[in-house]
Image (cartoon, rainbow, N blue to C red; front, side, top):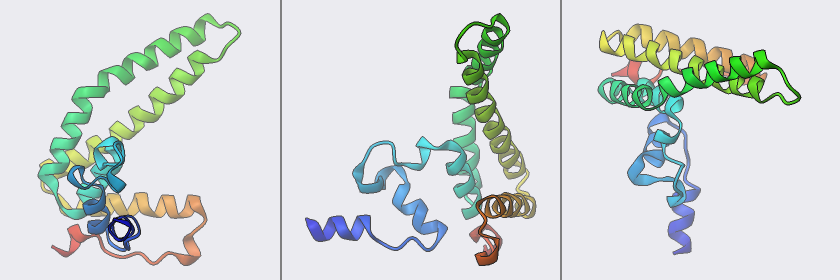
Length: 155
């Protein structure tokens, strides 16, 4: 049992495909609920896009938007109303911040899905590379970064 746990938990993740296999729903990380890609829809969308799984990408984005888009728009509205009322706490500010974060993530997911619906693999790859470069810059990793093609670009 220990060997199995070590093999599953400590295996090398050196490709996007390996990440996908470890975190897909039927292979949850260490069998812990909440570690599957579907529990992070923006990450799931990016991984599916990078792998070229465009139909799965569109389905995942559609499901996330159907389940949560209206809720975040309502949360934003509630937060703005609470912020306007003022008061001693900053709960309205918190709601606005959370809503804006998820609305921005939904916008990114919609962009990937729109490109996927058009089967525009070159534009998907270009967008993923832009996001990758922005994250590398933000994390201060540029001196160590070696851009490589996504599986989407190699298929």
